[in-house]
Length: 333
Image 1 (cartoon, rainbow, N blue to C red):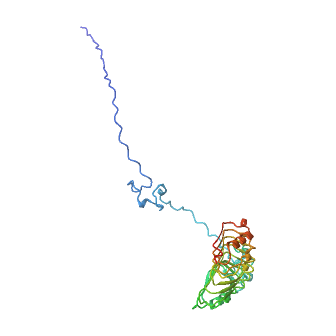
Image 2 (cartoon, rainbow, N blue to C red):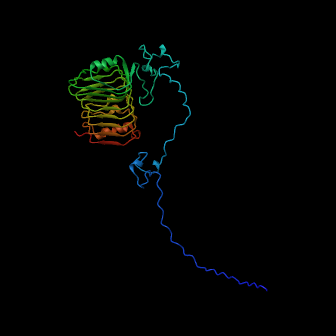
Image 3 (cartoon, one colour):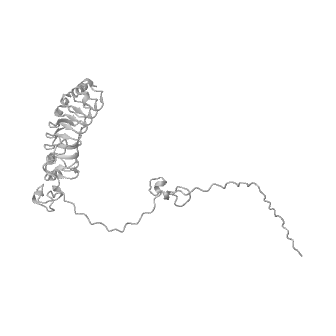
């Protein structure tokens, strides 16, 4: 018996259908700002790390790193004392500059010191320096001060009143150099009619107010940072050596009859004010000024006219004046 084998073809059918695209997902949340330490998305006060009032990337500082493990270096050598001019670390007799028997910080200033800046080249005096400002309240205080000092690296203030303990400024005759402001105020009833400072060569700012008639005499004053004479009590001034003022000159409300006291003045580095001087008639004393760095204002002086004021400007030379010139209301009577 024979066996027959039948082969039936197998046919596979594939169904094809075009794919359908899905919709995009929603947008993800924004990342956290680097400064947002608590992750709430808001700039909180606590997140202003650098304290500048703004929460921004400048507050994104990491934690401070640990100190390194290396050894500290050795301490440097001690500095040299200011008085130790030969650098040997010892107090030698020649280093006792002020000759008080001690070598200390009071010897730390140069005998040959010359300041070519605001002092106009004037050298501090030969006496011992005082390194601070001082306000005098009595004759005794002035006398004790002058027994030791003649140079002040600071300011000096003197206020004299009727019931005070200052009867004269003769106790300040020692002063040769005041680096900062030098203010003298003579109130009503002061009893002082004359101020003479025979040795003062420089003051950083010399300001004088006098309620009653007083004459001022500074025979060796060569330079000052500012000069302010402003009160009707100032009736006479002598500053024969004054050649330059490194700031402003203000002469106002005085009873000066003229400017003859300033015949030696050559340079005013800032402004020049001349106003309300009821007795002034003559300005020729300042014809020698050749340079004014700032402006000029001449106003409300009763006994000379605007034309007289302009004659002063012509003598100086308007081209030698750095600022504007204002002249008005002079010669009102």
